[in-house]
Length: 296
Image (cartoon, helix red, strand yellow):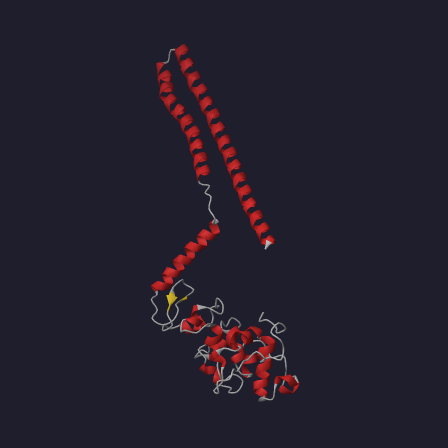
């Protein structure tokens, strides 16, 4: 906590120092510009004045008249140079605003507000609109939505795509009650696309919440799901129960590789079997919650 406060203070000090250095450098440059303009203006006055004096001695009124015509422009140039330098300095000083948010945060906030307005403008009747590569939004009932849905990363367990239908989170949204017993039961989950090939790429969005629901044939087929650490049920520790070998293998798969999935579903109403018993109770894995690996 203290380290975060110190880092924040250091960042603020660095920002203030950088701003002051910018102001100092800007004022110095403006001083050079204004000074050079004054010097050039004085030289111009000397030249014009010298020509006029020379004209008086030579008796050439045309040269004297031309010098008189040039004189106001020289004076005006000097005034404009000095005035513009002062004005720019004032504008730079006035552009330094004290605010609790930095420029990056302000820009990000504006972008988020605009993104939300565009998402709402899509006016989807069912589900959440997703952004396409060309910055447009499409609704769940449009062509291409399913492909985009399974290739667009979820923001977390509470992503709107999981909770829009009333589910508590992505664990509930993806959970399938036939876990471990029926090889095709996973197809009943809303996280299973009509086109099963969409679950194969490494960027499959629902992998952390749905891989443990899948049967053994998918542990290697999907590049997003982790491979099972064991070759067969004969390698399973005895404490993994006396259920069917497929169920025991899937249980081990979830416990060892997807600890977040276990913690997210244990003792939840949606994880009950047909008899009303919790399919994933506290003792689902033969290790304590603190020892159970996290889903990294």
